[in-house]
Picture (tube, rainbow, N blue to C red):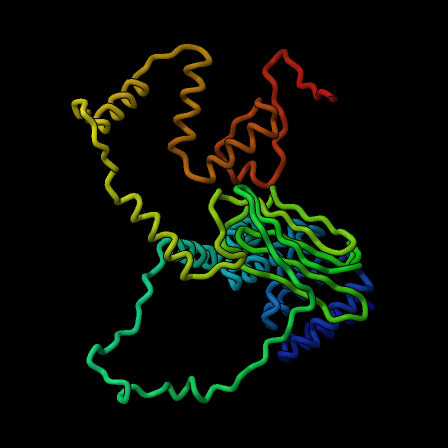
Length: 358
């Protein structure tokens, strides 16, 4: 039965009947809910329908059922790129490339991700329209396209939401009363929150904003209460979010402010004492610290601090994760190796790792 529905869905997909393909694949999944290929195929149909959130959810389910299914990673990477979540897309594509016999498509998309990540890090300045100073009011004509545009009514969302923040997290509340936990799906991306509520007999609700700042998935969680859904997002950086959702203008302004602070001169203060060259003293102290000869644990700790200070973000994440999860017995700098699994403890020879109960 499921195989017949799958065959009909593939025919519908080839004929560009994507909605029908989704419907048939949904019926097939109801019959065989453990078949990973069905979720991967439905993810592809959802991508064609621009249902990127649903596509990611289907791809994640396919990966959960069959972690070696390369096309599931391809579907997830494609959908994440459409949502401008390029780092998450790249991670999925890199994993898929290791599993696929045809790596060319994965490698091309990874290159595109790298390019888009670089563009996002260094955005182009916003150009404003030039205005003529000597133009009189009578010379200014209204924009025809603007005056003739029809007014489109914006549908009121099914559930109201609001947010507040702390230095290290953002708390989002969705006021959905009496909704069971089984009807709710919440996913956390690099800079995306995805919430789906599917109550039988009602229209599905999807809330999928691109967030103001990046988050750490491992520090995110949610709780379903009788009157609301409370979602806690762990901030990747302790910055103030001006809004819940990302806007390009805010990102450009934020980066511009940071660069202007870096380029500004240090403040000077009046003093009756002779002036000191604090920059020179700071450089001298740093040089002495660097040249300091240490022994034993002190030398080892200094070595680790220097590695961490000069490392990139992935290396720092790998060091912190491996050290914490192994109870201080493992220190790795390879994020690809430790980022996808729990790091087990590795005590020195002749010693035993014990777990204490409190």
